Image 1 (cartoon, rainbow, N blue to C red):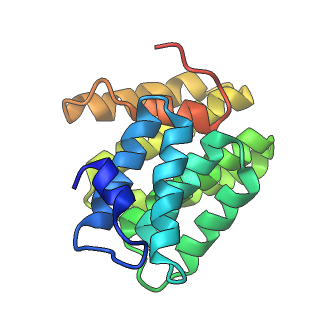
Image 2: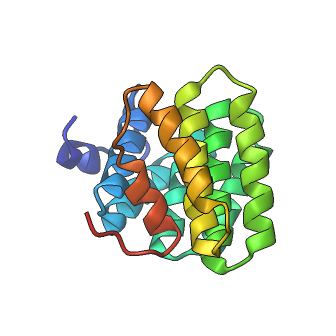
Length: 186
């Protein structure tokens, strides 16, 4: 389905693959800097699956809402993901990154640091090297925004991990920057 077809579909009709496609579309929009578009796509999907909670949707929405400046909603979304029995490790990682960035945006540095300690441990407990590297990108960006002395070395570690995977450039940097409330110059 195209975006317009999905938007025209009845709100009570969620087809197989709709959630994954809409989450991917929302995250892509966030990565290219279209924060309102990301929030719109993800909130429309959230409304379509309501009253149920889909941890995949909520984790992506947590990140988009942080980028939109709605820190309270972003933190609530991340908490909902952690509290849901169907949350995958990836849902928890995306929600955890969103939590750390939202706390960073709010200026709550201890909470941001604690959130990244937790999400880094979660990512490292998996075999998902991409998530482990991206968690470190978010952590390093938040550390830089906090003025941490070791922010550059943290980013060096993240960059090294990404390079090992052949991912030297990624739209996640823009998404994380926006979630921190830092403008992005491409």
